[in-house]
Image 1 (tube, one colour):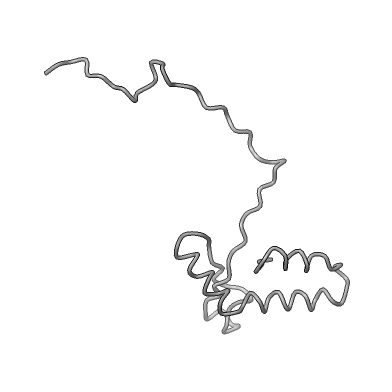
Image 2: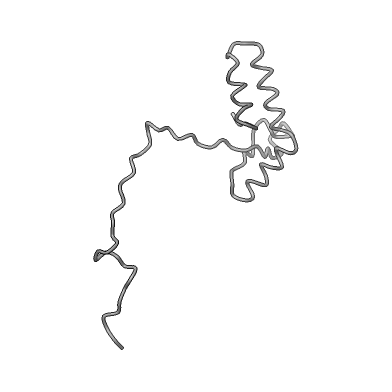
Length: 108
């Protein structure tokens, strides 16, 4: 689910799944996501390369897939258990592989 703020997302998640209040909380969260200032900020961020937009979904104002949603796509959450171990970088400073100072052998 997309979020307007992390605090709102946490509040919605704190309501148990079977509780009748959960549906009302999700409705409020979706309505806040559809506010003009949120959609405008999402568009501006996407144009600056700071995120991606969800083109289809519940934010489609036509309700039939004939318009654009402009809701922010959720960032991928990295799973620390699955992360690849980074290989240590080889040190090349001061070795024959250091090409920062290339000298010409041949003089013209």
